[in-house]
Image 1 (cartoon, rainbow, N blue to C red):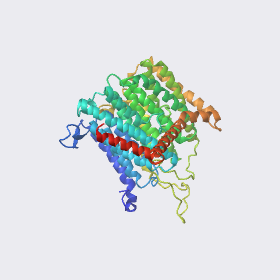
Image 2 (tube, one colour):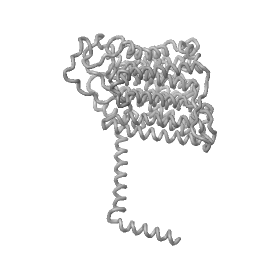
Image 3 (cartoon, rainbow, N blue to C red):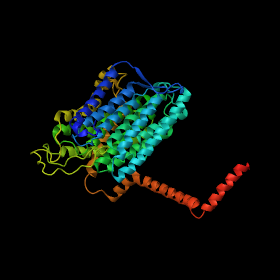
Image 4 (tube, rainbow, N blue to C red):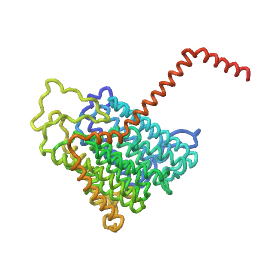
Length: 559
């Protein structure tokens, strides 16, 4: 509707239809989760192909939770944002991303997963190509390369699994050997974990899709691998290093947008690392990390600069900031505690120390942002209109001539928005973050009615834990991390950053490495092209022709 030629006539209905569609999708997922597990099948291709004849969809606990996170985060952003800040096609693309993303998550066989994966790639390609700046174009090309490699790995794994195990349901597959390694590569490339190129230059929607779909495949693969994830020996030091470096980048950064990108990569490293340490506890930590990214960091990135200064909007924003930094009374702190406990129980004492340092560094930007939020005036003040969605919005144009000035007490250029819808969009993620961190057992009761049970940390309640040994050490470390982060934020914030700090930040971001590699590849390509031109069209053209004639003569004479 928003993309039709007569879309101006439907402009007043575009936003309501978009929000109603997401709300209905969320309700359908909840209703489907309340029932028993069913498999829906759609004919795909005919008899000449013995495998992959049907597209199959089903829901289990993991796919349901990831689908709820994807749709719930999109609905939160849609309710909270200012009307008119997105391009006309943005709502259509968002709904297409939601549909294809859920199709990936509820796929019951590998054929369905591959097909939905490709359509999701097309939607992400549209998003990247509509980011007009030169730097965004460079990052779009890098992300396109990663997504293409991820799709190739997934297709190759699908072919091998179909040949070895037939068209078996995904939860019953045995991901061993080369197929398991290819699935692992597909998940890691889709997640885009640092230091892969383009990891810090993605928009909020791309981050959400990467976490929801890539994280789902990673956790699904962990659940299928009874003997542990392939490559676990090298993943622990690599992901532990990523955890520390992204925390350091977040502490060194003074700008909100890159800081949120660093925090996403930091929690992604936690998502990747936790199932490698231990299967049972690792899955719950990984799922909790996904919740924190989808409900805390993604809404902050989507609405950056566009939040209200009223206390009713500042409180949920404060909760999301605190949870993103692993602060108290939120699911962020509980996730950190569960990870530290898992590392201690599994004997990774070195990783325990690295995680404490990484968590302390990642808490620094949260403390800085908390100080800014508390310092804001309570009343609304005149401020520029928020920028459009970095993923989907066009450049803002000037105000029409002769337009009326804003009313007293209103933002100078910000359009009015429904207060109730915005409050709902801002508060329900914050409430989930608080409930998941303070009384996680409450989430177990509604979760028990869904397919499976909520597997977030401490779903059994605080009373079920013997607070001695690993749980006590992890709790003390998680609280100590917050104190260290507060001291670092207090003593390093403000002022002009030093040259050493800027140098360290630029070096760790590694954009210089990828730019140098791209220039080297461009030079090699140009050299080969010039050499080929000389051979085929230049002074050596006659010799090239004679060589081909000689080859043809030898072929015809049979020599």
